[in-house]
Length: 371
Image 1 (cartoon, rainbow, N blue to C red):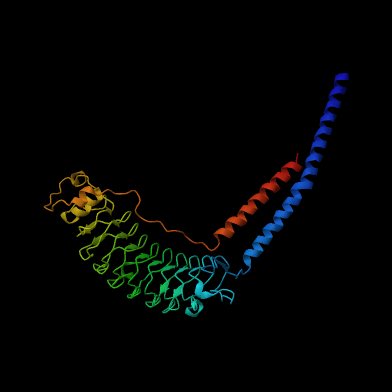
Image 2: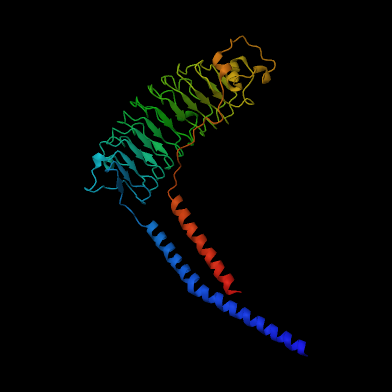
């Protein structure tokens, strides 16, 4: 009987200790966790409300040389007040907004603007003369902005533009003369657009004698006009990475200081009349046909290896080129975009991180109360 009594007393003591522990934990939860939970909830609601508001004020820096209007939920280019001198702005950031149209008058006064970033907006259409008020522009970036159509004179007046980035849009046609008069243009990037065979013509890149880099990767092109690059006498990098190209005839490609011609991950069967100036050619050996017309292309892709390792029975009378024998192919040649834009990425990440912490604290509180 004494043992039973001791057992009952011990059980009662254990229950008492558990009840005391539970009350102690509950007191801590009520004192710290619940107020913290309420505080974070209020902070989360504040951030969400703030993100839904129009933060239209732009932030100038470096003596108004840089004007940052990114991620302000803007619907149009803002009307800058008199406290900021538009003529002093050299770089204008308008990324990650909800701008749907660029009107020429909205850029009026930016007489010395050299770089304009419009990525991550909702700009579906560019009409003639859109950028006529910013003739000193040297770099124009309209990536990832749902851009669909561009009139032939949209870039009219940009005679000293050097770089243009139109990638990651839905452009399906480049009209003749779209780059007319842009004699200093060095870089054109139109990758990741649904460009088809008739989307470009022999006049698309006419008279672009300063062009060094053309990136048309991840497009739907299956053939190229034979005279597409006939005036581009300074081409160095030609990139058609991951396209639908089947056959390429380079007979009318100009004599230029080529460094790289890239057809990787494209089902190219024939690459003929490769200029002697091409030192590095990237393509799939499995797709290339073993013909004498393709011999130079195959030698370049092999980068110094014996052609018999790929084409055992091919016998041609084309002399060996020193450039072919000594060419060394680098591992990476297709430039990746500097950045991709998403209007809501930063807001999305911040809000979900806050929700994550809220859930952790809530789960901890429930677990503690259940002890």
